[in-house]
Length: 268
Image (cartoon, rainbow, N blue to C red; front, top):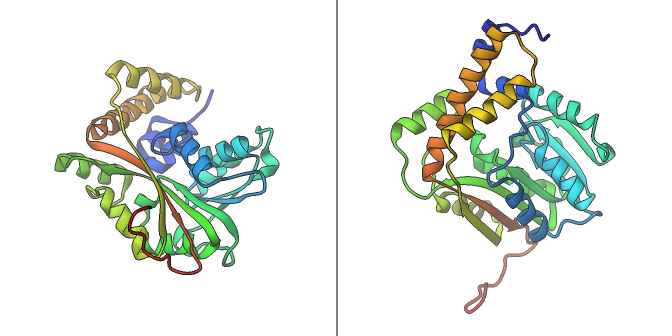
């Protein structure tokens, strides 16, 4: 039985908790977003892809299995990379995927190293988002794609929800709308190529409870530690569920053009 104590669980940050649970951290929109990304970035087996803010590797593994391409996943959290490597050790395509600790604002790769640079919801958590997107652009090859999957608010959420989210994750999320993201990529000199959007859905309290029970039970904890872990997880997922009332998500695909595109009057 795992000897993780109640006190240890209570002291974990959000990132540490998710890494401990080996929560795969699907991107906004999950498989739907990944499918849109693969199809509209034209990712094939010869493609070399960078997954920025990879968490435990969900997007990286999906890309490798869908397109049989090579993927490098980077994350600033050592715990997330350790969890990703643990999952990788059991993956049949592990030779296609590599993970390393790295800062999105200072990517440890030469210019023009990848055909596609993507992020599955992590750009929102980066302190200097413009600097990060400029790094995405730097390491992608000419005519390559920068694909950023992000939540955006379709309606303004209550201030208390934003405050609770920021306290939980120690970040500074604001009620950004779709234009916030489109303007960011434009500022970085990227060509808008394809945008796909859809709404988030709420789930029932029973679905939240069942999910949290399943996630907690797999850790084989003492009954006391399991109770505390489930309570924390239920609180977190209920907060996310409340936030989803106000959210949509987008797959924002931009292209790195060697020269600025000529304006178009009648077509995209």
